[in-house]
Length: 404
Image (tube, rainbow, N blue to C red):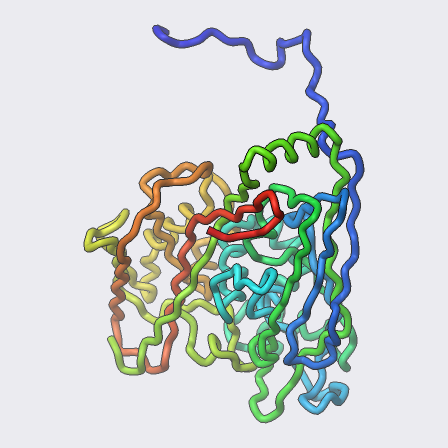
């Protein structure tokens, strides 16, 4: 074809070997323990990852390990009549916020669990959720807000904590610096603060007269550290000496909640605030009939989406989930049936350039979301809106970290 370059497929490039990566000379996981007592269930858990003269830190290959047990509100051991379990996706619900060096990097205040869970729900495939995610307590309910033998997966979760037996979970923290692939250089002292959710938020039981408590007996942060080749270190020193800064593009998430009052024509408000007989991650459509998103007054992507869940007409909403995955044909692990049963989410990409790589020009304006319901609501409902934005973390020649 005219103006097309000729090329040769790599399988016939017989004169070249694969390139050799000499960047990292040594790699290890280092264990960091809380610098404060964790016996008080209301106290945030603090870690310090101290600066090192030689080690680079890879936060996106780091994870937290927790040993837990469920007890009564007085600390007594559970009896045979106490049927209670950790919530579905317990690792996401257990911490309400993360601070890095005193900065609320998450911008989600106490809504970090929804940032963590929704991101996992939409970007992890079924294979991951059925295997690796079980380490994070990913055991989705088979019947929403039913915490007895009619919900077989609730029974599975409850078996872990029978008679207050200790059980383990581990996984990666859902925060921007734990998602960037770039290494952090030596000379950076990092303090990480994990704020705990209320026990009512991350426990499930059908009982309302007895209160239970999720107790953390052990919490360890495993951080991946690397000894890097001297030539790479020299290159980084040269960058900083020329008044340049280390750049870390980040995905920031901002979460807002909107309360929809009873009788007006989405998770239950009780569940969003935290109650042990309602699942915090059950996203019900509540009879929604129409949804529209406008940016600066103009409809985005679709003029509107229409639903009739009673007649199982919701496919256009289900189709929007593909925009969250980013790659055509990628798997978010949700079926049409799953979507209608506690996983009602709608995704709109207002980025005119749908590329998965690089930054896009900044825009400022307003987003308007309009909802219509087929019938008046009989319970207070919370609509959770999650926005993904771009930002950059910078480190200067004095190793001062700033978020722009």
